[in-house]
Length: 339
Ligand code: LMR
Image (cartoon, rainbow, N blue to C red; front, side, top):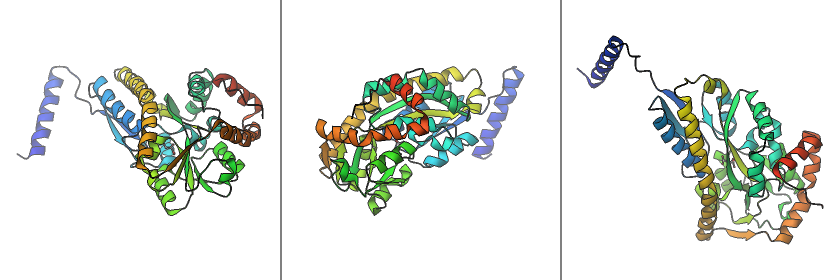
């Protein structure tokens, strides 16, 4: 008898025995596909693998998690559509990419320098106002399970970016939010939305001259091989939301939910512990390659960027409403500088 026939026979025998003993037949495990766009050794990549390990352990194998890194299953925009259709069950995209979901409010977190400060960012994500925003996602069939803070952005380009005027005429890659678009234009740059999985090539071929990101992405994607300068500007932030399909999550059997909730919590704690360390280490690793010139903005230089970019906050009052932006300031503790 062939191997597969033997396995089928054993399974059938076990099912018959269990039925005879009045036990429920062995159900196929619930499959969770977890798609993301970064490399497995970036903070999000590590947290996704930990989630897999914990979810399978805490549900005694009633759930199996398939992790698809590096856009191997879906690229940026496609993954959100796939989640809403139920073709994938878990994502952790940047909240700067939620526009296509029809929830423009998340773009507000891209207001220049709003989330530069770690404490402001943590205060904002822990504030009751997030409940209001989460509800907007739920209304789109998306359930936010956690927020993962991946730290402040730096810029890379093929020219030094020290004064705001250095951006003039440059083609700069953005993630997609309307606020990032407005900020680029305010600097005199030409914004281009490019999927993360296509960014290395776009930088290499000159489709774009530069981009902003966190050091751990620049390191793990080797952007330092196709860029010459890095400016530590901390003008924005990379925040992920661990999201699932609401119908899928609500339909999960009661005996697996606690295990999954625990896996979400522990991989979130792991992410928060790891991201800050990995980004600091990545900046040192990038420096050690000697391939990029690194410049840390002085206070005076940063002040010039703030003065140049604060008008974007005013401009965005027409998009979000002054009241909404004022409530974001209050919730995050951000005080707009008098310019
Ligand atoms: C980007 O597109 O630059 C990032 O959001 C990618 C990621 O998920 O870290």
